[in-house]
Image (cartoon, rainbow, N blue to C red; front, side, top):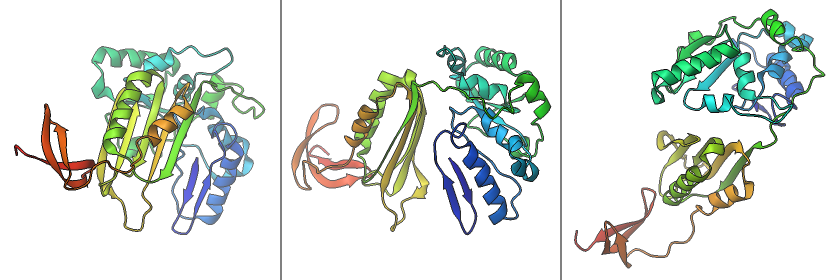
Length: 320
C-alpha cells in the first residue's frame, strides 16, 4: 500500500504485494508525487512485515526518471527481539525465501525492539544472529519503537556498491522470488459495532489455539456504548488493546470495524465467522428486568442501564 497525501489530494495504490506486483505502480506514484506536490523533504515507504525489501529498493535504480529525482537514503528494519529467532530458524519450502533474513540482510539500520520483554542472554543471541546476516548495519535497542528521528532520516547509509557485492543480481528486473504460500492475510471490515466482552473472549481463545501461527493481528473497532475507538494489536501471544481518548468517533463518522490478521495457514472463514459472532445483536433483557448476575456466585439484581461503558448491562444487586 502506498499513500501520497497533501492538502489537496490523496492517491492510493493497492494492487497486491509491494515487492512484486506493485513495483511498477510505485515508480508511477513517485513520479506523480514529484509532479503534483512540491516542498516535501523526503518520502517514507512502509512495506508489510512479509515484504522482500530488494525489489522496492530496486525501483530507485532501474527506473531512470525515479533515479534522477530521488536518492535512497536507507532501509530501516524493525526486529521483534521476543520472536525473531523463531522466524530466523523457520524452515521454508525449497526455493522460497525467508523474508525475515532478507529484511535483515538489506537493512542499514536495525531497530531491536521489545528489549524490555527479554533477558540479556536473549538479546545477545539476537545480536549474534543479526551480525551473522548483516555485519555492517547499526543496531539500535528500543522499547515501543522509540528512537530519535535523526538516527533514521538523512542517514545516507544505502550503498549500491555494497548491495551488489551481497546480491550481484540486485538490478536484474527479470528475477523473480517466491513467497511462502502458507502465509497470508485476512481482513474483515463492516459497518456496525462489536460486543467488547465477546470480542476479548474470542481473541483470547484465538491466541490460545493459534498464537504460533498468528504473526500479526490488529484492528480499529467500534464498541457499543463507547465513544472512543478500541485500537488493538498483537504478535503471537502478546496482545495490547485499549480505548484511545485521542481517537473518538465523530458525530458524522460511520461507526465501523476493521481487523487484519497475518499468519500461517489462516482459516479465513473461521476468522470472519469469529469476528461476526461478536457483532452486537438484540439483548435478551431490558431495563427493569430482574436478573441473576454471576459475581463470585449468582446474585439477584435489576437491570438499570443497557450498553454501559461497553458492557451490555449495568445491574444493581439487591445486596448493594
